[in-house]
Amino acid sequence: MIGKLDRSASREDRTAAILDAAWVLAGRDGVAGLTLRGLARELDLSQPSLYEYFESKHALYDALFADGNRQLLGRLENLRLPTDPRRAVKVVLRAFVEFALADEARRQLLFHRPIPGFVPSPESYAIAEAVLARGVDVLEAAGVDDPADVDCIIAMVAGLIDSQASNDPGGTRWTRHLDRLVDLYLDNPRKDAR
Amino acid sequence: MIGKLDRSASREDRTAAILDAAWVLAGRDGVAGLTLRGLARELDLSQPSLYEYFESKHALYDALFADGNRQLLGRLENLRLPTDPRRAVKVVLRAFVEFALADEARRQLLFHRPIPGFVPSPESYAIAEAVLARGVDVLEAAGVDDPADVDCIIAMVAGLIDSQASNDPGGTRWTRHLDRLVDLYLDNPRKDAR
DNA sequence: GTATAGTGCCTATCGATGATAGGCAAACTC
DNA sequence: GAGTTTGCCTATCATCGATAGGCACTATAC
Image 1 (tube, each protein chain N blue to C red):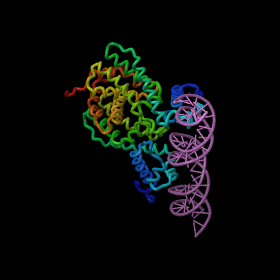
Image 2: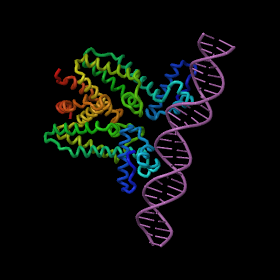
Image 3: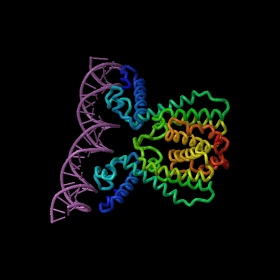
Image 4: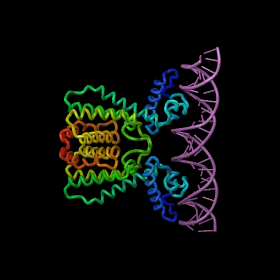
């Protein structure tokens, strides 16, 4: 039991408490292992009562998706960035990687589609796009002016995160190469025909 | 209806026919959207009868996983490789990427874990490892002797595939950079302290 | 002060899913 | 030809997300 839902709290606080409990259960049983009955049990609620807060299980996942992306956006916004643009890129990407790898359930929900049929709502996806925009900003400040190079760097970082999480969770077998690969990509922009 | 199960065929052929039908349904409804009742209906079988061939739904997924990896291994083995080791690397990785992107359901099943709780059996996973070993062989022939560099290249390719499938399915926005990035990684091995 | 509407929760139930129990008939084995 | 195995069936189970409908409390309107 995580804790009864405080019936005297505001609706907003109660919704947040449900999300917190959902994160705990998702961490324990996996994102896809989350059940409404289990969540309700932890909150000392009946399962149908959860529908007072989320109109479907997918809506709950959508709220978790938005919540996680807000956490990430907040973390990126609070970073103290070095003045050197290249160092700033490394700080931002490192923070991103560490955030992604800090919570397996959150990583799966935010960066993969572990739930059959779940697609984030446009409102929630907008938060994820704000995160991406923050990364693109820092990259552009470091001289990455070709969108193709941005694509490559994003894909490289995603590849490192996935390999790390899948094959060496908790370790640094892949993430230790982040800074070196950032330098490699920044030093070798695509020779395009602009 | 895909086709009734031929009751006079050998057990092996019937099992293969079930897998073929499962691939079709997975392609239509998604890997996770596959249901035993739906599969049985396509084969003109009752749902419990499928348990004569697979002891659980996860066992069916395991057979699909093995089947897909065998397809991939066969494709890699049949490649005519250029004598130039670097060109050989590009041919192998390109074949890998194209195989992964040719079938979305297969890609998800082989390279992600779209099914909650499904983990490939050791026997099936061994086939996936044989695929990986084939890639490592070709990389080593091209002078990649540091396992860390192998890790980085694998992660890079995985990142390209995932970005391509997620954000531009059917296009070439990421995969078009494969050859250039291969050159980049091969020309810049990790400077280690061996 | 009281009628009305909304909120929050409940029990009971639905349809779908994977899985199991148990039975029946054909085919194979010795 | 008796016994076993194979392959299939119907019936049913527990669990899941979702819905229906009702009860109590609160807030608002008049």
